[in-house]
Image 1 (tube, one colour):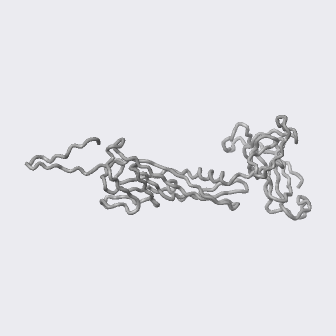
Image 2 (cartoon, rainbow, N blue to C red):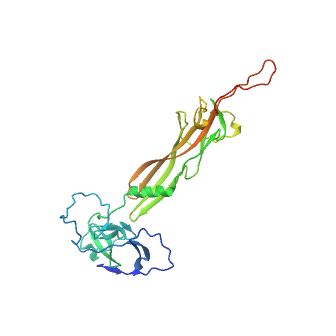
Image 3 (tube, rainbow, N blue to C red):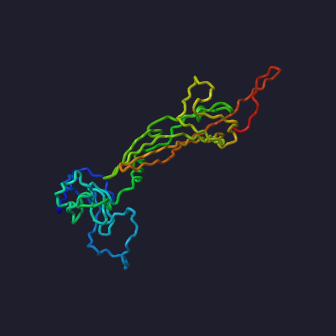
Length: 316
């Protein structure tokens, strides 16, 4: 297959398009693939015509994968439906599957390596040819971690939905149990699974809350491995079996007469790619509330039979 010229289709006035990525993109369709997308405008340059500011070209000694795609010296999109861009071949490369028979001229008589489809753009036309490549092509491949964070963004992880007993509008007592728990949803607790991909590479990401660290505002931190146990009145004054705290001082000397309480959810995020790469990422989400803690007030009894009078208190 020496070369096939594919004419772009005329854009349908009623078709639905994704938002335009930027001012230098144009909408093009490929008839042979029944595919339309936004493509970056590029200027064609003859080999050696790109100026380098008067300096001689410097040959790079590094063999690290390139992260910038260039077509004739102009920035170019790295990944499309055609495959990944090769700066040296100036085309998108995608390995043919299945491979053509060994008798095909594209093999050039070789028995190793593989045949790839090389798709390039010339004057608003797409030209496809088959090329034999002995090893791994020099395509600009997206780092899998980039796809991981794309998948994480799609998860829309949210702050924990915190609950306490006593609640934020109630008054607790010194040395009495405080119950702590969170309401579990997919976005606030997990597990939640998302994927992201480009041609030739895909990642699957799983996120799950590992623990909640409660900062109680009195210098103490309570770590709860689970969501905690919801409180109801039938529990009485018992301590929470899974996640709780006791204050030893009142909150009356604090701003608003309340302890600031923060719950930090620790997300454990694991991922794996179709290339065999794996990894783990730690992220946090937090929410806050306030708790007012008082003390039991003794009642003074007049021995002469007068009315009971509580002692005078200061503050809140």
